Length: 336
Ligand SMILES: *Cc1c(COP(=O)(O)O)cnc(C)c1O
Figure 1: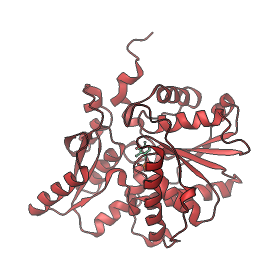
Figure 2: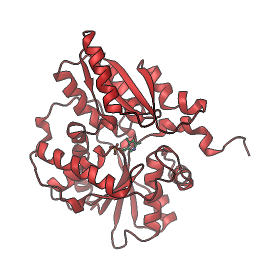
Figure 3: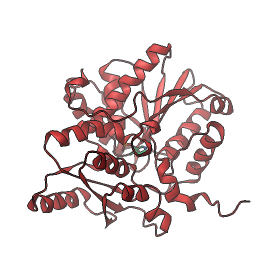
Figure 4: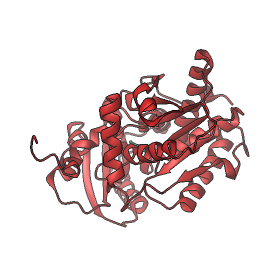
């Protein structure tokens, strides 16, 4: 498997740090907890979509695109990172928002990621919940094409085999960091949504026979649905990198007990996890993804789920730029 065979732009700040979390380790009573800082990929404040976009935007360039279309929730981190790199590359960017939460407050609709999307000069459009967003993107692409534009459509979350290459790359990067520091990684835990992150990671870890298990903590779908979607993309990604069949179904594991009310609605455990990471380690999580991922991570560590394992890595996938969009969820309405 050689990733260098694929077209790729280089704009992420890599490698991202792999750091110990000594205070959290002590608070939770071990095992040794570490954090892989993909919130520090650089672009637009960072996040996991940047690694995917290195491959996706190279593909767009090869196809002669001058316009990028993508979609997500109103507070989408993927949309923010896409808007930033489109601006940098001199491309128009159309962001199609699905109103998945129905939240009416000003912060959710205009602050956080949305403020940054507008700073980057993207065109924004909102659609009702349960709109067929792939169809909406196809309709817009057809309209722009008729006007003489050359649109390139990126699926939600950048999650297709090309985007997932970014997380095959992350798996290789973590193995290299571990090998060069004498660290044996026993488990990687992260928030899983549109599936490209987990699919890429398991492909990278399996195709190298590393034996590193990955646990995705779900933010939307029930476990069976999430695992099936991750596995389907992992199979395609493995085939793309020349390792067909490298990922077995039982190597795709999700825990979807921390979703709470639904996508985009932080649960009490989400808010608690965000406060704990901030106050113990000075690290900012987010209310939609990493807060839920960390809630699962914390509870599973406390429940002894990783007993007998020494080094557990939480992959920080970013998202703190959305915090301002969720100001009301924290209830900090005064200085008391
Ligand atoms: C998109 C996103 C995820 C989920 O990654 P997927 O590849 O969509 O599964 C996790 N954390 C943050 C902050 C994200 O923006």
